[in-house]
Image (cartoon, rainbow, N blue to C red; front, side, top):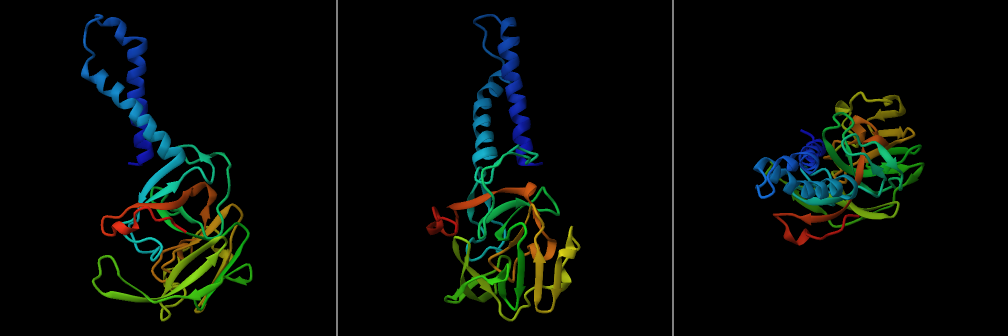
Length: 268
């Protein structure tokens, strides 16, 4: 069940009981009678549920990183905080935007509802904004005809989740908009696995070949890629992210059971 929908149902249930008791039920009880448990418990939980619902719906929501697609920026097991307010105030459950605050920018690490299954939340980096032309050929990323600046860094080694083999990748410092972040690539892997490219809405705006691809981002949509470029299921394969699917911007790591030193780290 969708968490926001479940919280809303609990809020309505507990709030309804509290309201019914205030307006009707307490009048039928003797003045010295104790509240029944089915009234006492909902009334006690209602303010707590209300606070959690408001915080998670409009301000900050926690997420856990389940995969390695954003390595080295985010590791499997990171618990992160996402700013729900920065891109606008949205209705809980439906995600309909009520008030516009700002728009995603190049390089933002963004959480969004996966277009193929909106019940799933994905996290990737914003590479292309509405109207941009994104090109990725031979492991070089270009946006609107301008190569994204990269600088070589020390190689990055990691163990992939569920696999005991050590993976060695080339690491680069990439500058996208105001963000300077690390990416990792496997120079022996293709820029895109052509067999994995799906049919998706406005697929005709993308052209693929053995060297990579070029995509023209539609208005009101975004092109997303993972920082672990060769181990990321992203817009190369399933297409664009509509603005209606945007959840918020990741800004901090608040916990990781396996790497306590990461606690409190910001996300660039």
